[in-house]
Length: 418
Image 1: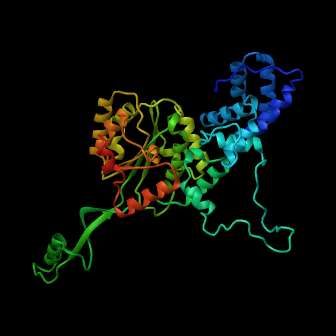
Image 2: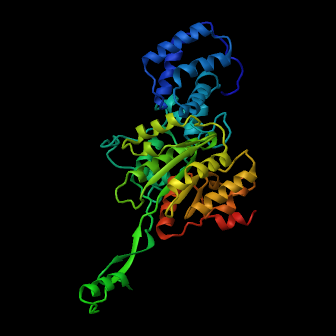
Image 3: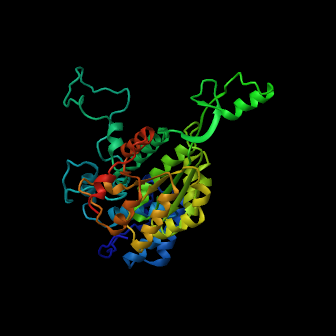
């Protein structure tokens, strides 16, 4: 909850109408709120009173927030709607960087842009509708945008945390079209092939035995190939919430693509505990799949215990899902408060059990990032690749690197700091 001075009760409060308008703003920001919840919220405020800011906040929170992912959006809309002076200038400065009001020049915080869009409700400039023209007979070009990036190109490089509601919806559609190709693994087993590079000794001898021991034909063979498993370990703590949700949309797309190349896709979430959400990925509807996964993982936007969670995975799941050369995708910022010694031991065992251990860290979006945190320094020696995971472009770079077998990323440069 944001910390502000207590609310002052006006002479003519019209509290019911204000709560109704506040609920509409929350609905535009993405919260599933209907008339029944609005009536319950007004009744709850009447019963709880309007004297303490904290009581008023949590009363509305209890009526309107039903999922962990909605907490940040509710907090931002509440702050902008109920208290922040001159909030219109504040929101316009978030929506349009060229407008400078009372706010300082900074990047919007989590869910702040979506809250601004919900409260402005079209107050900002809108693009012209398709098929409409200016009333002037001659077409006048004020700005030549031929060299600017398209909207989709800008969305590719935009940080997941800074996306608006519409941008998140567009990003999900782009993620649903992406693939994560991987080259097949060459095994020791042989398969018959007419022009194979190796001699199939067993097949040659069997053929000779059928002809009384006469060797008149040499059978050929080549090595068989198979697809590896993909194992995703995704951090869903408070600092990773928005990144995790969009990356899990991408993982759901990979798991449901036919002919994508992976034998099986296993997914686990962790915050304060480890949760297996693999069975939910089989649901074709991505929203239903993630809703079911979120209901099972009760530690969304909670704390982080990376070492304990990875140790639990090593003990309970590694033998089941890491066999036959599985690729592990670890998605976390590495900010752990557990003992770094146990974290290093858990990471070492995970590294030895997997074919490739790839670490996606959203903190790599900062140019001056250095692995100074103890948790990050303890994890880096035990990974095969260290890459950014904060945008669509970073996931596309991961897919391209996997397809050509080059997954190192920033690993060598980061290890130089340790």
